[in-house]
Every structure is written in structure tokens, then in C-alpha cells.
Image (cartoon, one colour):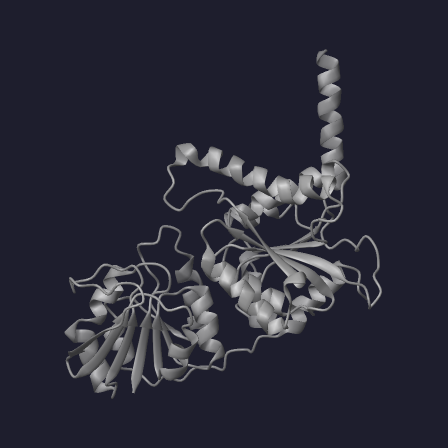
Amino acid sequence: MFFIIALLVVLALFRVYMILPTQGGRPKRLRRKSDVCSVAVFLGSGGHTTEALTLLSALDPKRYTHRTYIVSEGDSLSERKALQLEAQFGSTKQNYDVLIIPRARQVHQALISTPLGALQSLLACLRYITLRPLFNAKMPFADILILNGPGTSFVLCLAVYVSKFLGLHAPVIIYVETFARVNSLSLSGKLIRPLADRFILQWSTANGKDKLSPKHWLV
Amino acid sequence: MLAFLTVGSTRFDSLVSFAFGDEFLSSLRTKGFTSLVIQCGNSAFELADNPQNGEKRYLKRGGVDIEYWKFHPALDEEYRKADLIISHAGSGTILEVLRMGKPLIVVPNPTLLDNHQQELASALQTMGYLATTTVEELPAVVEHFPFQMNTFPPFDPSRFARVVDEAMGFI
């Protein structure tokens, strides 16, 4: 019995090792100029939302379609800003949708109830990223997931890794550390770094080297 | 001239209270500012009848016409109208104001636990894009207006587009 459990654990770890990205690795396949990719972006409210939408505005809306905005429950401002960007793109309702997920942790939530909130948040992420695409082929999750923090980003990553673990379609994770982090990584950044397919810093000083320069700014 | 003071979606009691005070108003007046708009968010301050959401209040103090209110969905109009913007150090506000080429003084909120606003504000001050200060030192910085600032780099959408195109195999 012990041997079987140990074997399963080793196999599971090996599987996780196999699906971890190699930083700066080559894309899995090449695409033609006319191909399209669907993209999902998490809007983490406030400055995170502003930055995430600025990043999205940099993409060609004809190539990167359909677009999914993931918004925390109660964050109507982020949703409104997303709709503004879609209006700029000249989109119709078929071009995008908005998913609402519970917050991993409320701003003033007691620490003791955090695991419960995080679990609820994870279940919602699993539903949209792993389960719904599995049972409904018409509702696949995006090809790309753009993240820039905060907390819920990590929960989204975990759901993506459940899909990867099971060998299902999973998005390429692109994490852009927020412009606000000049000297160090955020907690989300530290957690997501080994999981992201592309992990991008906007300040080279965040790695503890170089002088201040705008050359890596993306927003 | 018009100055616009904003605290974003947070509350910043000490900055908003200070903005209604004589010391700050007279520093504005010295520099020729006759109007001040204050977006006070959820801050608590001395005026007992704080405005309700969506409501604008007016006041004249120290020779300055003050308009104050809690929130507005589009602050870009306010930025455009203003000759000087004084703000909490939120990254979204900083980017938006500097891209409009407006002079900006930021006051990082010292009561925030995880104070990375200070980090960004100091970096951008070192690079000569804005001035950063504390609530108490604000009048002294206002008195340096207009300041010489470096031109803030414009948004370059091709950078992130390249990152994503490359990651997705569009070559």
C-alpha cells in the first residue's frame, strides 16, 4: 500500500515537472499570419486593471480574439473599463465576454477565513478553465492568459495547472509584473514565476541589478 | 490657474484635510492658482457634511475657489483641465497624468502597509518625471512650480505585441 502511494506521488511530481515551462522556451507551434488566438486577461482592480487593459490595447484585436475579461466579484469599475476598451476596438458582443469570480481574499477579511475564500475562488476558476471546456466543446478557455497580479492571479494559475496536469487544452501564461514594482517582486510575482510561460519585469532593477531605465516598460 | 488633487479609490485622510488648510492654499495662491478641485474618495476630513457620491460641493477659502467631491468615473477630463496635478502615488494615475504631459506632484500614502507607492514615486522622481513629497512638505514643493521635468516616454504598444506574438508562434 505504502509503495503504491509513494509511486503515485513520484509519478505526479514527475508529471508536474514535465509540464513546468522552460523560461523563454520556444512556442509549441508556429502560427500563420492569418491565424487567430483567444486571450483572457485578469483585471485585478485599480492600477492592476489600468495596466492590464493597457497591455491588451497593444494587441491586434483582429488577431487576438475572442477576448475574456476575468473580474473579481463586486469590481464593477474594472468591468466598465473593459467595456470601454472593447468599444474602442469597435467590437460586438460576440468578440468578448466577462467572467466574474469570487475574490481570493477580501481586503479586510480575517486571516482565519482566507482559506475558505481562496477555495471558493479556486472552484470558480476551475469551472471556467478546466471543467466547462471539458464538458462543452463550444466553450473552450483562451489560448493565452495575461496576468499582472494580485492574489487571484495565482489561483488562476493553479486552475491552469490542473488542466495541464490532466493533459487538457491550457492557455499560455504571460505574467507581467506591475509597473509599480521597481525594486522587488510582488508576492504574486514570486509565486507565479516558476509557473508562467513568459515572466516579464518592467524594471530591470526588480532583479536587483541595473540602473533606472524606461527601456523595458510595457505600459 | 487650476490645481487638481486626487486620492483615487483609496482614502487618504491626512492629504485631504491638509488640502483644505491655510498653509497649502496660500502656497497655491502665491503661485497664481485661484481654483482647486479635490477628489476626496472615501477620506474622512474636517468638513462635517462630506459630499455624497455624485454630489459636488463648493467652498471659498484663502482666496481659492474649491470644488470637492468623492468620485467621478472619468478623471481624464479633470487632468486635462488642470495646470498642476497633486495625487496619491497610484501607478494608474501616474501613468495617465504623465502621458498627458502634465506637471505632477505625488504624495505616497504612509499609512499603506505594503508601501510600494513610495518605491515607484522615488524611481520616477530620480528619473526627473515627477516630484514626490510628504503631506507636510507639499507647500514647499508647490512653491517650486513650475518645475523642469523630463519628457515621459510615450506608450509603445509594439513592445507587448512583440512579446505575445513571439510566445504564440507568430513569426
